[in-house]
Amino acid sequence: MIDNSNVHNKDLSLIWRNKNDTVSFKINEQNEITNVKWLGGIDKQKAELFELVQIESSTNEPVSFPDSFFNAIILGDYSNSLSALSDKYSHDNTLTKPQCVIFSPPPQFQDSSLNIFTSEQFLSFCRHLILKISHLIKDTGFIIVHTYEPHYSKLKIILDEIFRRENYVGTIIWKKLEQSKLFSHVNLGMNRYYKELFDYIIIYSKDEKMRNFNKFPPEDTLYKNPDNDPRGPWESRPLVASEKSSNEEYTYTFKNGLQITRKFRYARKTLKRYEQENRIHFTKPKTGQGIPRLKIFFSERIRKFIETGEGGTTPNSLWINTKEYGSVQSLLLKLKDHPTLSIHLPFRTEKVYKKLLHLTSSENDLILDCFSQLGVVLKSAHELKRRWIGIEPNKFNILNGLIPWLNKCSPLRIYQNISV
Image (tube, rainbow, N blue to C red; front, side):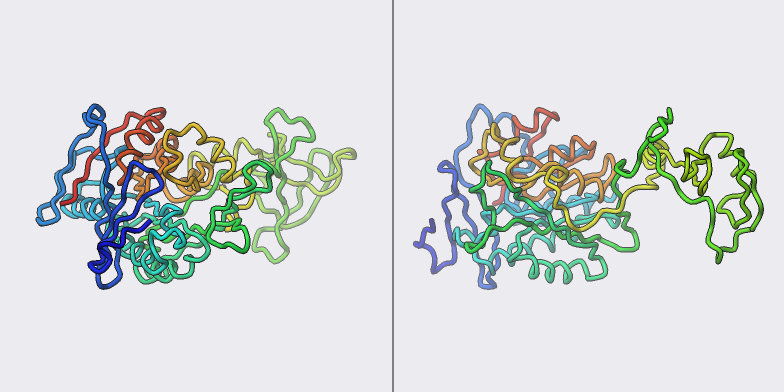
């Protein structure tokens, strides 16, 4: 509901879904959203949990953050919080900037039918914040933007402008709703003519020359163990090279008497060692004949991936397996006991964000979540042994939702960001 009393001054006060909180923001003459604030009472007993970080918008002095500022939530306005973080990193070169920034505005912000933002205001709001984020990310880092179909193309233009087209990594299409009678009425979308099954997740790097986009761990679906090898499941690969190869041609006699004259992929000594290790598989095992191939064990590939990062699986852009990537229905079940589920519509699953964080970061990297909401991303980051910072302007949500939810996996520090 909009309070129209100040519309002529372009100062709008909007009533949020939770009856205890009011969100206000200003719209300037350029149609940009600024100074988003949450109004509402705070429990005096719980207020002792806060360590104060004073932010004065009227001064150019940098904000004094604690030295070890991570695994923490900033309570405050989105824009001013990002400005304060930008000042923090620009004035202290010894600090490690965020490797990955998650930018996924709440569904309520993106749906113009709720009268919080018009589509134009929402895009101006996003551009304003993404510009600030561009100064925060490490040179090796990434920004991940999670949005709906109606805003995808325009957000892509904004990101091209700010991060440059050559730093575009790709767009992942995630199937967020599954075919299920459970919560069949759920439709987290903005189209009243059909149910929107997919979200768009846009990924940009800060610098294409320095980015390191990881791979997923190897999948064991192609590995079998038909001969009950004690080393576990395996797949086979060719021993013979192409005729066009520059490899040396030679004759090799295998233990079973099969003699082959071809260009091999491996030297004679290596083939002999593979035979001694019982790694040669013949395509006609019952007769001991057929084409010889090399056994590659899944356990070895996993070990190599863990030690070197090599041998992983390249991700595709269509994430439609809800068992692997989660769904909104499964998220509703997981969060059914979340203390503040009524404030934010759940739309980010741990499975999706654990995979996104795996692709774009490593252990101990810093993750910044610009819209903490239900704490799904922060919890996922912590469980992957990443450091994290969250921004959340809703006092009620932090005190009654995020603190008890995140304290299940991490000691939590709260920093209050005061905009003046």
